[in-house]
Length: 572
Image: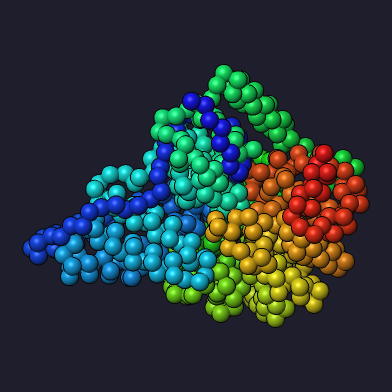
């Protein structure tokens, strides 16, 4: 029987397929005791399952490229940390060894024990990590029985679940899953961001989906408006086919924009840079006519390895990046890694209570000057092959930039004394992603050559809302008066001092926000290559002078509804 359900459109696109319903995870196994003589063999079986999951996750990590390596990799790294957590492993061993529990029931008990600890925490970030525990435990449980992890897709299916981890999405798409519907979730979660990068239709917050959709039901999903039709009628199928034709036409139109300028209706050129961390990203950015690389993440060189990359390894990676952009500017961000990422080199601190606010970014680099010197040397050597800028993450105060500037000048002098060929001047910029840096910017804008605004972290810190916490999905949004006023202040400060300013966070890659950023004075965007053409189209559809003339009205909006009304009027 036909039913119409609604959620929130999180990733555009239409899909028609059979439903695969996954009920919320619960490790429902009966209590089982084993005889004393079976303990050692049961421990061997449990350890083998844990080792198998380690290998599985490591293999998946090595298969990732480009944006997937960043977005999915962060979650795989987090799960790798959980899998190596002594609290998890020693607890499991103790349950089997002293309690004589079977491995399955030990997993359930340890899962419940850890979940109760997280549930009792005041910090919403840690409460939301229960999902990660379930994901890891579920993988181990599957390995115990030598079967695939629970989440398996079949070509042509639409997954219906309570929620989906970002680390699962790429796997689902590769298996042929054509869309995902979740009962929970946020349009600005990591999962939604990755779905948009993958161009996989996603509807979140469809609260009744698990109750009203059965395995095998045919679904028509619209990822743009959040509509789900169960057992579509003839009229629904006609609408779906028409939507698919429109989307195909739109893809062709976007393809034609590959060689077109990013120019507003009144003739102003806007610079579109690409975010990247792999050769695939660089090649795609080049093919789409990006002005350059606005954010090159160097973390991939450091993670999931036992030893730090030396100067020569880093130099070769940065040199190839510069050569790949054939004379277009490349912005290389210094290492941004902390205790929230799996790190076997001992580089990052372990056991930090709140890694997002811990020793990461420039804080870690300044705490380990040898690490910073090596990276700066490698970047400066690459500057001999083309234009390079250096971007410093997690800046909080003027003193940090002065220290990095001093290190850069010293290292440049050493390289020249060694006879190395480096650029006469390599611009040094600060990432503005900490509210303190945004507010104090007038006091240190003079000592940087450019700035790049990281809207993901800035939004999170300004609103005190973890973007990974689905319960805060409605709160975590850049469409907040405080965020827009702060962005306007940052961009205006940079312009007054003649310093280039870009936005490199997720906000830059969403064409919905393009008129807002243009109205606030932004002229440089840095975004995932997969969304570059959509943003270019949005730029070409707007008159910049008209948007700027409406900027004051945007800044006077009292709430999100007022901002959305402004946006609807600007896009009409």
